[in-house]
Length: 315
Image (tube, rainbow, N blue to C red; front, top):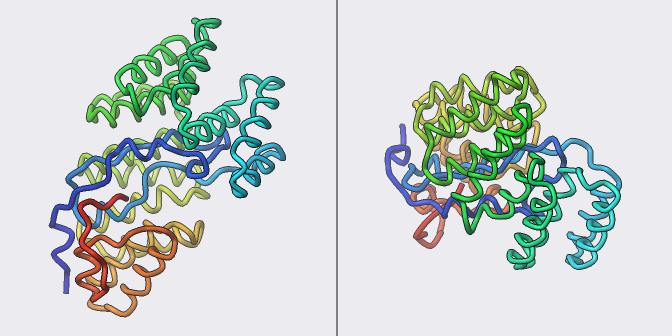
């Protein structure tokens, strides 16, 4: 018996939250730009985790050390270690992202913006400097951030991070068609980037273009089958189309690659609830909760779980 939850609207947590990262975002240079989830989607959509933060490739010894310090709550020491490394390797995007995310988690947004503005003033024709300054601005001054990302790709049309940042800012500004255009422009210069297709799938999903989202996700999978995120995006897209068989296949694959993906657990809870298997649905929903995700109120109610009604529920 198919649940009506897929057709019911529920508000989501503010899209900008997903750009916060510290220990929330991947730090390696292989990760994508954070993506935003729009408000007003259905329960199943609200179950998804913020896209897209691909699982990082093996971390460098420095990144491992910094991650360890962050896990211990030693943020000041982590910042000092990162600054030391960045003096030696000033163009390491992965370390810059981790440094920025750590400062933001410490409430040091003003410091973050001033430092990267100073870098940009010293190198106004450097695409990386524009990207990093845009990323420092993204939460508080999204339109300005968008302009910085746009300048980055103008300076270097082959700069992947510029396109990822630009599409993210556009999506956060609810300029979704422009975000699609930015990603497609990037594909003309970097045709084999799985991250461009990964973010394209996410934007299309947010536009409720589920068939097109699946197409982009499948292209990402073809380019890099090791990423769990495109499987999750395709799984939720199939779920929204009422195809529980393919939804289950893709979501299970996502969990095989990354068992800690709470969003995929919530997606499978919907799949099994649609099948009338409440016991299995409840198992997946509770696992998502153990992984730190709140169970959407309507789903909790359908499963007989004693969740307090939520004003909003994020991916």
